Length: 306
Image (cartoon, rainbow, N blue to C red):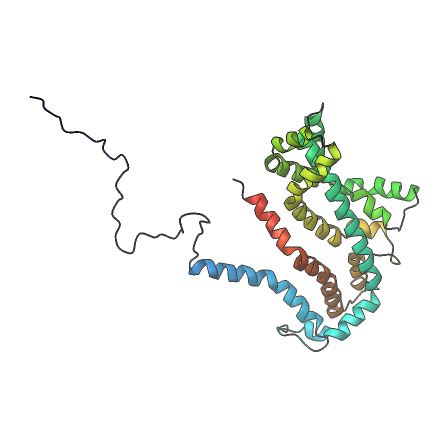
């Protein structure tokens, strides 16, 4: 007589789901891909306060530019725009020759931005992915230049520009700032994480030259960081006042130097000064409107690493 033993099956190793109370299965997070945090009322209040605080200086510039001098200095000051905006804009445009100043600022800021993106991307790629003797020492020297106050180089730089015949010309503002230590460090840090060695090795196996690797591999990967660096560089070059004020003259100013002429009188008209400041701000707003999506995308690409 044969006996058959009951077959045993392996117990299910998956843990049983824990019971959840009705209405408590969902938290503040949407689980899964694209996990997001739901903001509460305090979040919206904080965002509104920060947004209004950021917009208020521009709004006050518009309000002050649309009134006369007496109304701007009244107590309490006006909070709504007036009817003198176009006349004040015209007065600021004529008194400070803002047309030529804006053209000069576009040339200066554009040249500095393009050169900074080109040279800083190449230098950042070299420091991030290429192996050569003295790389660490050179990178340390580049970072060390950030600790030197720019005021220390004003006198020798001014003498150098005068010796080569660039005194009062735009070249004296453009060439000293074609490349910056911050840009080199910024691009190096980005490319260390964003550019894998496998892409470079694959390009070399395919027979690509160094120029081809930079053009077809490095630049597409570095584009988000280049957008951020380009925006920062353009804004800094556009708003620079100290060195252009020393290097240029009143006949060939940048926008900030021209605005300085508006407020250089003994009793400057604040409404006209604000009108000039409003004119100088519009090109920056235009640049951000055109490239804002790419700039924000570059910031997010640099902030989110997986």
